[in-house]
Length: 162
Image 1 (cartoon, rainbow, N blue to C red):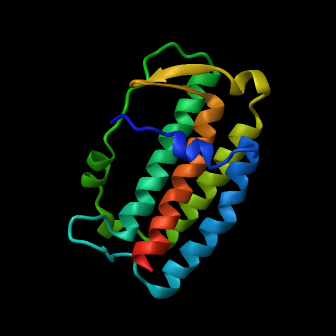
Image 2: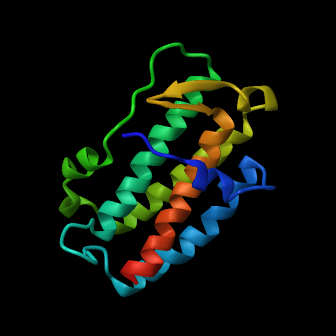
């Protein structure tokens, strides 16, 4: 799947990638606490939409994939980076077996790990780039995409699930 990631990137104009990755964590924590309090983990706002569990797992999957892509580019790996189909990932998920408390912990730990990963990249590394599908992305842009993607979905949770 090819996406235009410019909306995720442009929402952080004037903010460093490390700050973007860090500031999102508190907002996400607050929203996930609301979800937990309301116990709406299996709720779908429409029949063909993901449950909250599935949506959070999607965010985790995407963050893992994009973090790997950033590492791949940062370390000058010349192997081809492919796109992925988010719907295939969710359709192969058995969300009934996922504990929502563990899901929250996993995402929070992953976000912190991603933040530390990007803190380890110097300015030269952040400018390295590669082609992913039809999109040429730098390590820095990937960091902004990770931050913007998670906030995009937190906004969807607030608007459609709560």
